Image 1 (tube, rainbow, N blue to C red):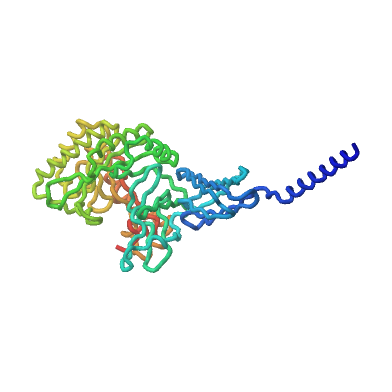
Image 2 (cartoon, one colour):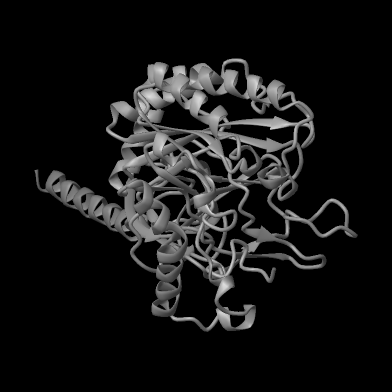
Length: 450
């Protein structure tokens, strides 16, 4: 028995020794460290793993109020890796790591960068140089203000000069932007440097997403940020200022159905909806605006006949969609002298459309009082912004205070707009206001010398 007891004692000692060896060589507790490069685009997330048993599986997610959730995962990570998340906007990066023995660790870190309105910033442009070294052109060929759908914008945020490896950009209006070059897309969130209440939004003719169920979510987002009115545009063009034929700008045969559906959905979400009928010249801007004061068709009867046909067609569509306002003419200055033709057309529109009517013009010359049929409409319609160019020269425009600009705009409102509104006892509807986030944007629309 004694010998057996010694054997058991020796065995216990061996077991203790073995356990001691195991405890000395067992891997440390799984630990994860994360470092984020906030200035990179895409966002670069460095993940360092210690402890546990390699290889590791790393999963990353990014949650943002402006992005669809982003998920990235990688197997076989030894100790550290750098992951690129296709965003640079502020959000919560969630990192989860598991080891070969199914131990796991997770952490969250708030990362990303908000760009302020008007701020200059740099993007990694090394991959996106122009195809021709002799031609300087915009790096990003398309830019979308992005909600849950994508909408076209002509705003040019990023340019790359020859020989540079960085894209120099400037932030435009607050919002979420998706920049696309070829197959790559990168996102930027631009936050406002001041509190601005947005009370209208223009949705252009490109039918991307109009009429689909996810547009409901987009409308809900718009309501949350304070928007209560949406302007839908349908565009037509002419080949020349003397032509009589009018052509639809959208090549999509189903555009009218999508437009009607989208306006119905907007009404269902409680928005005030305006349909705007636009006619331009088939040319690049600013030549496309040459119809404003240059439209002189060779046959006015033929032109008004086709114009009226289209206007009435969309009046019926606006009525079916429950549209509130129909702006059926947009800065066609040379046509407004035909008072009786317009009065006749207005009467025909009212036969099929029960909402409010207006035409858009001004606020600069020609004067609003040159239109003599405002009494037949519901609003004095303004197309365009007030600017300080008539008060100061270009150099001094950069030194104006907010109070200075306010007083100049107030004076213009009193002299150029309110007299007509008071004469006809009509409210003013501003169909378009645009001030880019660039220096001297209150001087003129582009902020450049004119």
